[in-house]
Length: 481
Image (tube, rainbow, N blue to C red; front, side, top):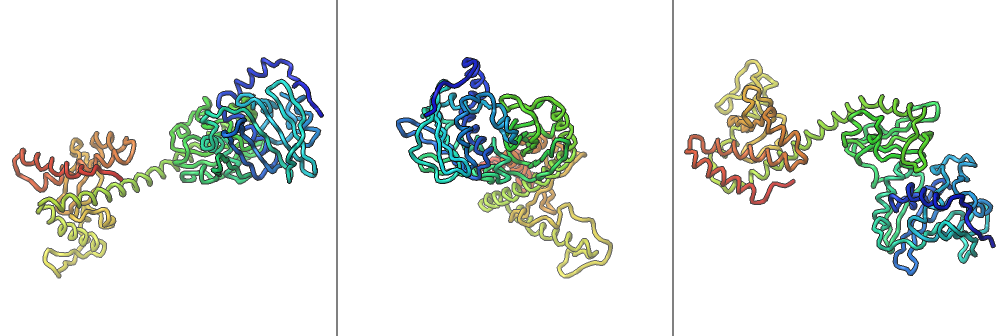
């Protein structure tokens, strides 16, 4: 039976180092467990949170290659002297202090492991950062792998609940999970939460797994528009920085826009002791150069996707507005508005025949030959779903002749022209935080134009009353998407 005191030259300094590196987030030691499992070539990793027992714990189980007995028994002598580094293993861990990180959230660590090719299971237990001992194995593992228990966790630590662990680990092991290097699952109270690809990837791909060669290996870039905010810098599947825009060397606005997400993976990058910052060396300089070269391409793609998204958003808003306006106008005696239906149909017919050079005359059944007529202001190819039953449709224009006019109404074609150069359009639409703010502006200018047309020439007091009637009717059920 092996037991003794951990060999740490300066115990106070070790505890201070642990606190600085691993104490910021209580989930960090759990990351260490998953990282070690990934380094051991595990394909299945499961975390179990048990807060109901007398001695609450978190366990990490994996099906990796396990720990050979000689390495397991020498762990107490290799604190801050990474065995993985000595073996020149290409792993996420490099500094050899992960072993003690359990002390920031628990009081006891138990490691049970069966190495690949061995029929025996061995176990080691650590009490704080002071003592260790080999313990008997009550339940040998059926296959190679490792189980690591952290006992004495705080039952009230909400960050150590399954949902919060999934959120954190999905971010920290983004590359590994997206590329399917291993499956990860968190279980608590019989509730299983898999950390899947769908939980991580979102948005429209801009750059997909592009390999950029360097003298030290490839930089792999994956960028999504509209994904999780920020592009992470990763090393061997482990997140070094969740958002590279926090690096002072990154100057491109596209990285700071909040419109893109994704990862930039550089396995050769050297990192600080806490693995939260890259070391400023030649590898880092090359990384920054390669990232900067991507900026024009990403900015152009984002601009194009943004324009497409805005167009789809406007169509959705106008379609809703048309439906809501129809509901209100059905209950109001707006005779002049009903007449717009016929005018709109006529305008559409004129637009359809514009390409053939035939113009439908005012009298039914007659056409006139000649050059193509001037295309009506309303586009004939606009989807009819964007029109209201009453023939109203919308166009956004830059009315430079009347910059102070928010909108105008063309009764012949049933079109409400919304002026893009008016200051309110910029404030209420272009700078809107969401679609509801845009909808609020569109519906207000629509109500104004409908009332001015229906009650043209009426006394101002009557117009104001009718304006209030339709506005209150529209807001009876506040506009929503």
